[in-house]
Length: 444
Image (cartoon, rainbow, N blue to C red; front, side, top):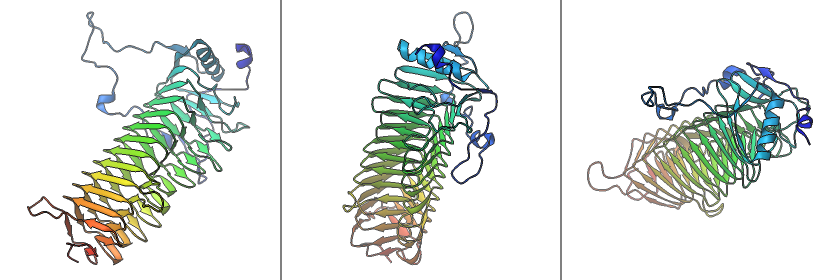
C-alpha cells in the first residue's frame, strides 16, 4: 500500500490539550490534572540531560537539540513516518510539543503501525499519543513485534483499550524491545480475561525515570504483565488495578529488577503491589506502600517457586483481607519460594488473618531489618510455617488480635540468632499480647 493509502485513514489530532479522557475502572473520569501528578519534568538531578558547566571550544553549551525527523502535530503524519521508518530500517522521530496525536482507527489491533525496526520517538512538554475515547473500535497504542526496538522519550501514552488481547497500552512481543525514558503510561485498559493494562511484555522492557499509573487489567498485571525481561529504574508503578494477581506488576517465568522509585497504591486479588510466579525478582531502594489486596499479599508475593531479594526497601502500609499484609513467601504446596530481605523496614502492614508483616511458608532470611507496627489476628509481625532465619533484626511493637504478637510459629523453624553482644543479635520485644508462640529462645 502506498503512503497515500496509509494516510487516508480516519484519524484526527488535537493540539495542546487531550480530548475526551477515558473513564477509569471505578467509573471516575480522570482529568489531565490526575496524570500530570507525575510530572515528567521532575527527575533525579543525575538524570538531567547535558551538563551546563561544559562548553565546546567556541564557548557554546555542548547540549545538542534533537536531530530526528520532525513530525507535525498530525496523526496521519505520525503513521506515515513510522511506516517509512519500518521500511527503511529505523528512524528517530521528533514529535511536536504541546500536541496530542489523537488516534481513531484500528491498524491491526493498534492505533499505530507495529514497530519492526529500531524507532525512537522524542516528545516534549505535553506531548501525548492517545486513543480517542469516541473511537468505534478498541485498540492499544503500540505493538512492538519481532525485531522492533521502540524508545519513548518524554511522551505520554494513554487511552489504549483491548478486550481480546493483552497489553492495553503497549504490547511487546517476544523478540521485541521497549525502553521508556521520562515517559508516562496511563489510563490504559486490558479488559475481560486479559493482562497488562499498561504494558504486556513478552520480550525486553526497560522503564527509566517513568510512570506506569492508573492502568487496569481484567486478569493479571494492572500496570505491567511480564513474561520476559523487565527492568524498572527510578520509576513509579502506582495506582493500577487488576482483577486477579499483581495490581502493579505480575511476572511469570520472568526476571524482574526494580531500582528505586515506588510500587504504591495498587489493587489486586493477590500480590497487589507485585506478584512473582516462577520468577526471579530483585528490588533495591524501592517504596512498596499503600497497596491493597482483596485476597492475600497486600505488598509483594513470591509464589510458585520464585526467588526474591529485597535490599533497602520500605514495605509499609499495605493491606490484605486474607494472609499477609506485607510479604508472602509460598511453600511446597504452591511451589516453594525463597526470599532474602536486607537492610529494610517492614512496618504498618495489616491483615485480618495471619502474618501482618510477613507470612512465610517457604524459606526466608532477614538481615539488619526492622519488622515494626504490623497487625494480624495471628503473627502480627511474622507468621511462619516454613523456615525463617533472622540476623540482627528487630521485631518490635507488632500486634496480634489473638496470639503471637511478634512471631507465631506453626510447626515451622524459626532461627532467631539472638547473639551475645550488644547490637549484634535479633531482638523480639514490646509486641502484644505476647512476643512469640512456639519459638525457641524467645520470651513470651
